Length: 173
Image (cartoon, rainbow, N blue to C red):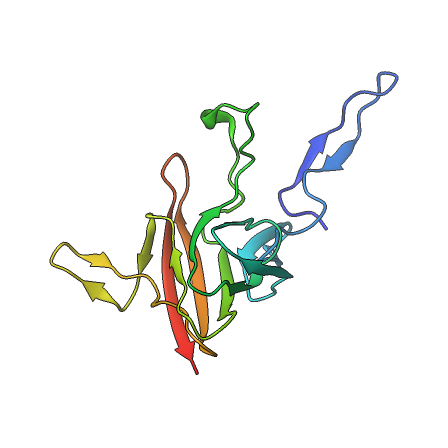
């Protein structure tokens, strides 16, 4: 399936052909007919990634899936980040984010036991519906305790050197 179009292949014995730029839609996106070509739009067609039990750090790779699940270790403070191609060999300017503008992911969080665990989200996530303080900041989801589920929906609202995200969450016992 072609998403972004065609490009000329490297020449082989002086001959080039048209090759697809993409071989499929990015995770969390669907191919949509755009009148003569294909486009990618955010969609609820989610690939699933079970991250397992996380203790102090976790990295969510938006290109790996659109729906993630994780279990938070009891009494832990988990610091989450969003994946890039960050390696010691790449300068910060050369790193490529795993998220695209408009991309949506969902995360289901459970607790390993009845003791509260806390998640530290990236500072660039703006949480909807839980306004705190006078500065217009938003509160992240409450600590995860017992059998409470926390379902988080994140939307990438800005990319570049300072990406931004909108977050909405619900809890259920």
